[in-house]
Length: 133
Ligand SMILES: [Zn+2]
Picture 1 (cartoon, helix red, strand yellow):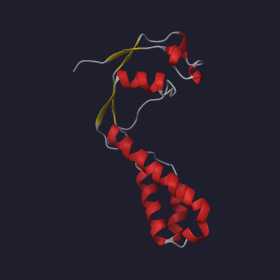
Picture 2 (cartoon, rainbow, N blue to C red):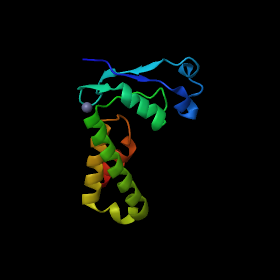
Picture 3 (tube, rainbow, N blue to C red):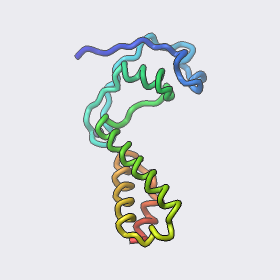
Picture 4 (cartoon, protein in one colour):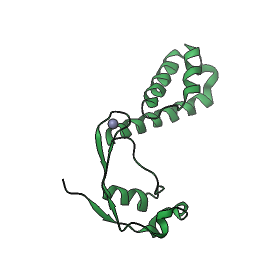
């Protein structure tokens, strides 16, 4: 397998990266990073091109690393969107929704599924929803 390389331009990094060690003595190139997905254990690659895009276009912090493979990351993203939507409904209609078994069960499934990708998140809400069933 050939290793991908992409030229580093630290002037494009997010402004909150100026304090990191690499800012003043940056590497010349991004190099493909091979890692194992924290959720499913599959091997994945954070390619040099993706790194350049992530840090220089999307302005994510330079110390940010990937922990999920693309498939798990996509599923986690979908679950987070659904969770946010349900939180919004909950804030507006809590009095009715707390008696809506379908809503409570679905939200619980979403939170439990999301916890597979990021441990320890929303445990308080999971407990509260379980009490409602
Ligand atoms: Zn995965």
